[in-house]
Length: 353
Image (cartoon, rainbow, N blue to C red; front, side, top):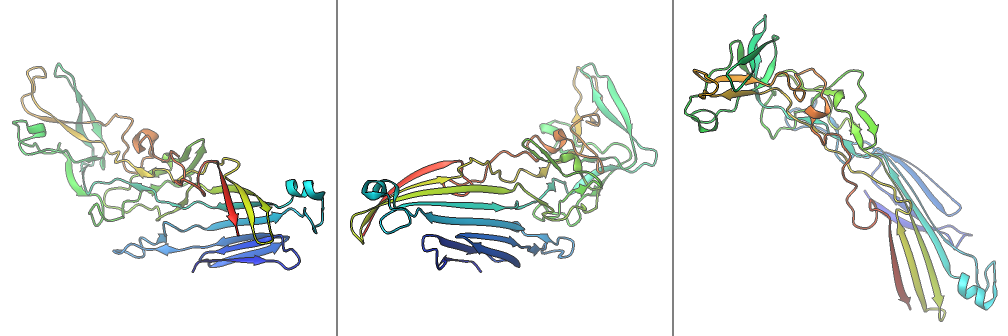
């Protein structure tokens, strides 16, 4: 249910009131001295088709609070009005209208997600697994022991080996097996949500850094993330518009109107929601094939276990692992004219008869 109505309060014919409403559960409204003030609260929920209870949360367009004030005032100057300044004064200062609109609302929901492959490799040895962490051009291999439960992406190997090499795919390192990572699987299902780390503040509010990547972690293999759907609010919206209008009357029914409309007079920056999809930051196996320089007799796997841009399930993301644009406010609400635009001034002329 949506709509709008125009009202004129008796005794104040020069002050029209504008009232607008949207579908709300609760709304408080007050009118006084030619101003319309409203404050609304609303809440909607939605659920995934495959699991209603596990995916219950707010809709993408759920705006909890909205606040609007609008007023239009005609200066009481002119013949027969409170201030009669004579012919010249009435022509210059009479017939002016001044109006303003304040629009403010809380942010629309932010959906934080994480990229999770359907299948991962996981160390199943109680004592840990020995992995190769690198190889020099001279063929010196560095190794490390990773703990039980250490999780990596499956190696990507095409037919005949990596990059069309002549070597066949090789088995996973000793102790690693392939396990199901995402319950239900399927990239189209909206079930890839991260874990929210207890006690971590999900907001940074540091210049344009809005969402804190260190508040999230990748769930353990086979588990759902504990973060709910659309759990956070994005940036709020605030804008003040003004209008100045002047009528030059020729007869009782004809006049020439000049209008100046200023959108976002204070040039308030209203940001759109940031990117909130965390990268797949699990370490990855890479196949190294024998060359005359490295002296390998057969292909081996190496894993980037020491990289600062990889995190294991349960570990907090850092900005490098999450992605350079994660949580960063990079664009404003996309409007050409009106709500959400930068400060704009437009002029209009109209002949009324």
